[in-house]
Length: 430
Image (cartoon, rainbow, N blue to C red; front, side, top):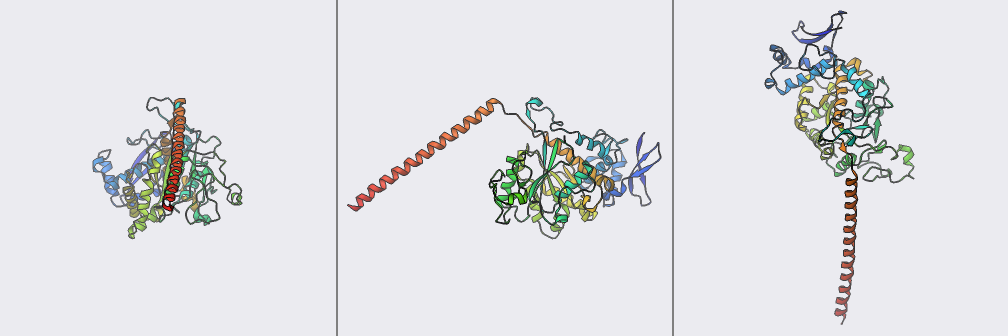
């Protein structure tokens, strides 16, 4: 069975990508899901693309590069790259099913490549790669998790993560999700509590984010913020529970007995509609807070890899606003508008299966997870040798000895100072 891609002109002279099956004569089109084809300047991109084969990259504006990226996702989502030279060899011809199969069979370290002259058995590869979702409140993190279950785990309409729109409450705990619903899954996705735009400048927020990246995260780990009820017990810097006797433990199902995961990759989920509308209204606080979160120094632990940017709620904007919003946010955070950024509509809240209602969003989500695992396997560090542990123990001993001498010196200073004060007082009495 052989498929060919044809470019057909409709009555309105709009360019469409049509996938035709010569053996069966059936024709399927992904045009209804290509919202960007009604945007201004799209006709110029099409003419530039088909004038002489591959488009001249030097002539592509930022908007045209976005068109090129979206067309790439649409073409790969259709499951056919035959006849195209730009995208041949990318994930094969199976579309989202081929990429989904790679995620189902993925084991932590499968995408690791030799670097620095170190073999794989010398690398400290965790049994499960961990992807952390971060973002501000109502950005769509939990909805994205439900979409992952629908696309990757074939869960249908079952909501595994509670969204703020459905439950009316925020995520208070870190929740681990096995989105492929497999006992042998090689990765997991963590849903976190959203930050507040107005409070992101607080040191406590940065401390919590650094805590996740430095000490790791675990299932049902608490996410406490300023303004939370006073009757909720606080946690230490590593996020473990300090008061096991509190009755709130059973009420909120908190536990530190779960396996602690090291964060290997971060996905930043941003509500593009909310950020863009606020910016157009003259409020730049939202986009500035997003920039600070994206550029946070805490993410440097992941081998200086930048977070993957997921833009949600784009369907609440017009076509022109959606493209302009993407360009503005990417410019603000300092990343390319075509690499490591995905415009994904979380359709599960509306009762639709993504792979049936929007194959482009379904493929973009699957590729984003695939990219996250590629990044995860690049962040693994070599195993500590006996020499490394010996040096660590020696450094601890030296620090302890230094602290001990400092304490002795402080005690001697206070004792000596107290004696001189008594002698001086006796002289004054005489």
